[in-house]
Length: 471
Image (cartoon, rainbow, N blue to C red; front, top):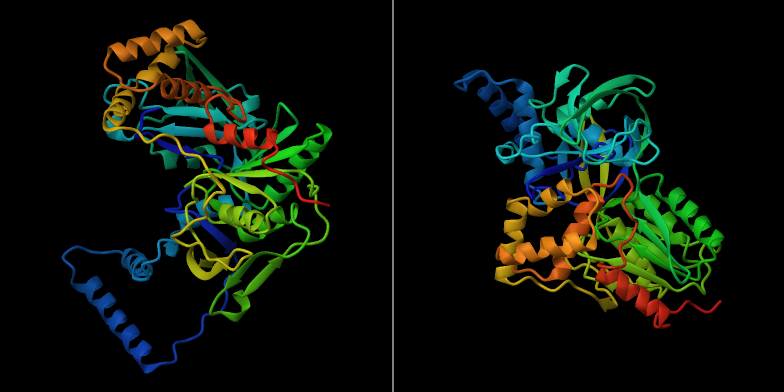
């Protein structure tokens, strides 16, 4: 994929500017301003609003001024997590808070307009991958396919948001897509829309009785999916567990508290503090647990682990239930409330959260017990990586060679070195593996060959340096 290519999940439209832990609430009555100062400001605002409508050189829709004023009010808070939501924004937000929608079940992408000149297929919508078990998956769409038309309308002039809107719809209704595969195979598919659940959990067994649980984000379904994963591990006689929340941007506060409760039998999971009395809350673990105390647990974190992911990591670290491996997390220690407002909504920071030890990690993050980092690239290596991405070298190699043998890979890497690409073979092999995974409908759940953090967690478990708790 080109480095500027804009990825978008139909499964979950990630439009947030930053990670969040949030609550979705019903609208409440808003108290009238009581101070004379507030009334004076409102009067000034109304005067200026009317003045602009009547005197600006061009006619301005009142809604444009209204939404601009609302956005400006939130900008003045200097809080990246508080902002006004348009009706379209609110719909996208509901995908995460509700956890499902009516659609076909695809991850798709479309490059920016300035990236299409040298790629004849860039005007189309690329299927990054179908979601396993969804209508698109069952219809036989594959990673690497291109959608050229939706119904009879070409997609080349449609924005990615337009495409999302056309593919979504009422469950049970049909949508016809025209597919381009392997450069010259064109065919049509009618896909019956269904309720699509946002994928949140992936699970697998690593040799040696090690259970691997990846939590992608925290939606209303995450706790149920984690519970199912734990039952799967039990059937496979797991003796240790790795929880991977790297790149997890957060999600629902209630959900992450439920997930943490699967591992903790007592004490505080997380607490919230606010100037609003009703928002001061302590989430406490219940006595019953799903994962026995004698099971050693490692939690993988990185700078992309944020908000709700940090709540889970912080709770398991502070209670000494798990060992954290990886990089310092993102550092978001606030809670947002989402409230419908007319035809849109607002997302407002209403509290800060604290780990069991009473620490607020905002702008600090959580440090791992065992730090693992990829080697920092030199200037020459950074330049080489830029060349690979700009010229699309690895994507073209994988596109042109569906079955890559070790000999083919070695020859390709040798050719890159001759071209002046100064990157270690391990980095190049990892880039190739990542690109191959992007071409797979169901990529591997974990990568034990190139994932240094996962390798270290496995080593720590197998050597007994990560232990379970006494019963």
